Length: 358
Image (cartoon, rainbow, N blue to C red; front, side):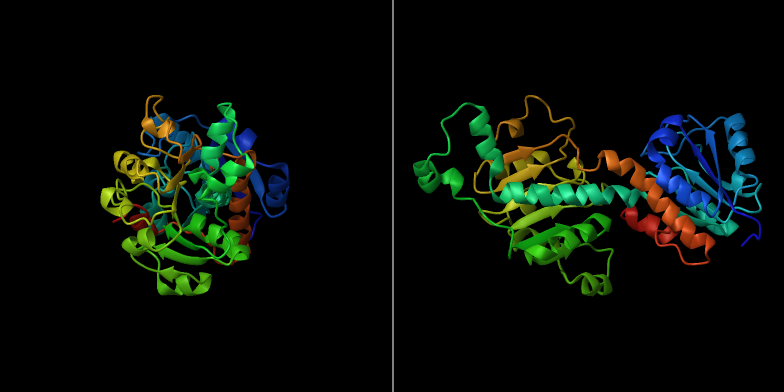
């Protein structure tokens, strides 16, 4: 590690600088390093790397020349071989919010240079897991149905209705229930922590995690079929990859038990929408959906009017606090790195391959 005071740079839009950098986190960083910011305004995409003109790429290279760590976010060009070949001190590169796929970092080039690559995209896992828990509770009480009836002006909720109407029959508690999670990543692990007071039995399907994780978090690692068929609540938490696109169709939804709840806070395209709607027509399951395919949910889609569906417009991860958490998590990583400790959220060729579902 360089003996002089480290220098950390952020390449991003001005909006990122103004909204992602919390004063307390910046003050914490400035206790261990000098901070620099340079504005870049390249088009950002979660689907492909920025297409950058040579003169802008040269500006990034010049900015990085004296840095010990370079953080990128929306607006930044890609950190590739041309940057690494021009720097000597750079030992860490990081992505604040890249939707998991490191479009702005050449992970293999970082490895060859000897620079550690990390990302803190998981910062949004905290609010998503909270909303997943909220959706679970809403679904178990069939609250969407009651809300629709009440805002429609119906005389709803009489003692007789509460004791005899079928809409009140699905009025369940979370405590002691069986929960199935499709995906065992950051969101799932945070959700498992939130579920502890409810003493649930948890089943997880994720081909990319091992028995050691299942043991540490006390869940049963199992097949997709078991996750769909055994629990009282099924929560979809996987990212969209070639392997997960459309993974939940008619066959999978047919496995869900009568009276169970389906929650999706990940990506709408993981679900075959027509198959889910058809399963919901039976009226014996409830769905709580923060995401849908396509988005926004079409105004003429039948899912909007189904009484056993609760909908929100992809709000799970977009809290006011969520933006600054990305930088807070990055400062945590920088503190570990400059203290000579191991970072927690490394990007490696293997992790990227897993995220792409390869």
